[in-house]
Image (cartoon, rainbow, N blue to C red; front, side, top):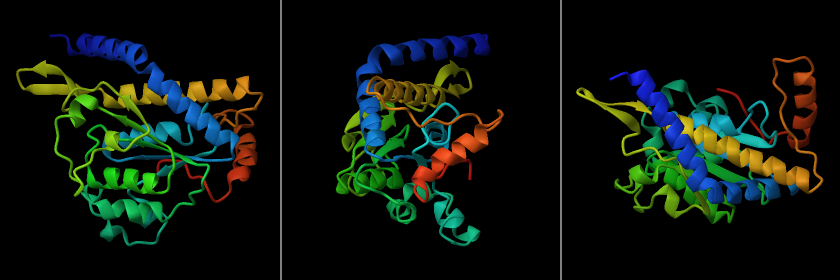
Length: 248
């Protein structure tokens, strides 16, 4: 088996299927984001493990929206002054992690949340979703329905991410994420690719709606082109103290 060709085919097929089947949910998500931007809100993104890549795709991305804020498992260390040795490698499974992370961010009534989780069942993910809904804020979930439908949640409530969200986008990854079968087991995870595509599609929808409504969308230029930093910094000032991007 030529694994390269096989995976390229799977990536194309699942990307096409995502557009064909998830577009209604993606458009709903884009509408929520556009509404938040028009109201002066911020889009908060949370993901753990490899789903953190989807949160990075939301927040601080060239061509993406400036009023975006990334929440991360490391925030209690990076932002909260906790000792690095206190970081638990299994923190994503602990519901209390969500409380520690969210407490470090400014959340306002016009905001919206995007939570990405392939499994949708880890304790911090479900607890973050519960905290969002306790605040009556819109919640967009990006998850694998094939995977999450076949697990038992690690959260004490037994709930999974999709059961708490206002909009659910299925990233179409299979149970276990890997899409190619070999004699040594399944290989090549797909969720990062399809989740990133879903994020860019909902951002495209949001920006299109803003433009159609006569609103200039506050978007990032690449920091690696002339004038990018100056433009981005000026627009970021509108959301001072409310947004954080980057890999840390």
